[in-house]
Image 1 (cartoon, rainbow, N blue to C red):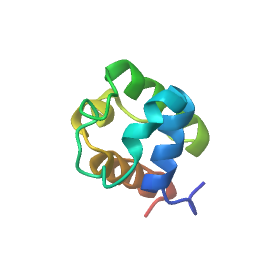
Image 2: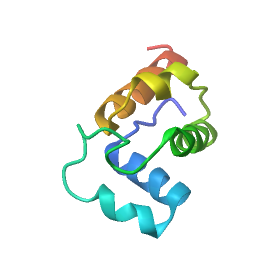
Image 3: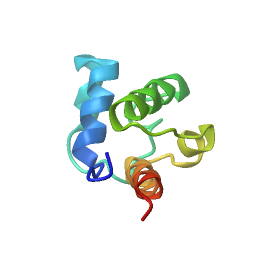
Image 4: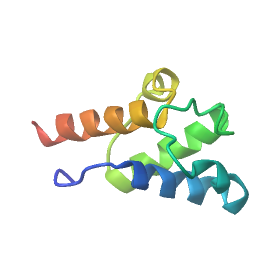
Length: 89
């Protein structure tokens, strides 16, 4: 998995898969710095998102990663930081 890079498109896809079509409308446009709560994603939805990221990318995300990174940009960066640590770089 070390060659993978997590992108905003990956996050949008995972959010869509977890929430379904009704929630996906909020993911259009520039959402990078919009709080997940303002996008309609509560803590339960983020836990589901975190679980999907962990399974797909073979990493473990601490609860703090989801609690502390409240925007798509911050979460993408945190996942990529984790991927780099796992890859040893």
